[in-house]
Image 1 (cartoon, rainbow, N blue to C red):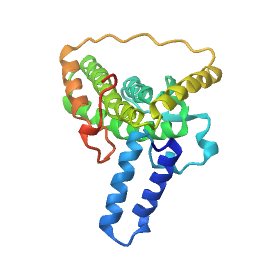
Image 2: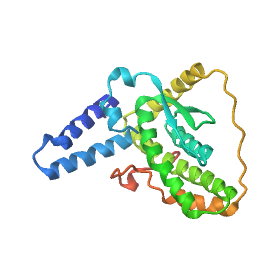
Image 3: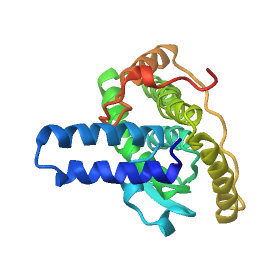
Length: 231
């Protein structure tokens, strides 16, 4: 079976073909589709494939900024996304959020945040209602998206593990490293208080919106290729 590094080399070759390494459009499109399938199996994006070995070798920080209204709700969604990729984070009242993880994982998280946070805000605005309803909407949206991401990406990693790439085991080890680095960077954090659901109607609407949100980043991956963790 191919090793993790061999799969990365294969992805790089396919991306080179897709970037113009073939004069035939059909061949370039097939190469990109194959590269995207492999990248989902490894839970990595193009930035992660192209980064240097030194950049990929240790956890780092990435800062995100969210603007009012509903800053806490946006940060909560970002946390749910980050957790799927074993990234840790700390939020600040001014809308700043610092996530810690491996650069390839943070790149995936950033791409998903850039897609899903604006989608949630648009859905909240369309749903309308009271502040309480909107906050319940946002919490349900984040919960639904988090579960679907775990299914889509972590399930793909289990497929890779069963095929002998060792990706799931590698990410488990990475999670331990990230947790240690995070505690060193932020040794005196206090846990936030849990939030209550105050609008059942808002929760139901938010869950429905989270179920239809696009979590695939446009990747062409057959649903049958992804299995839920534990199956």
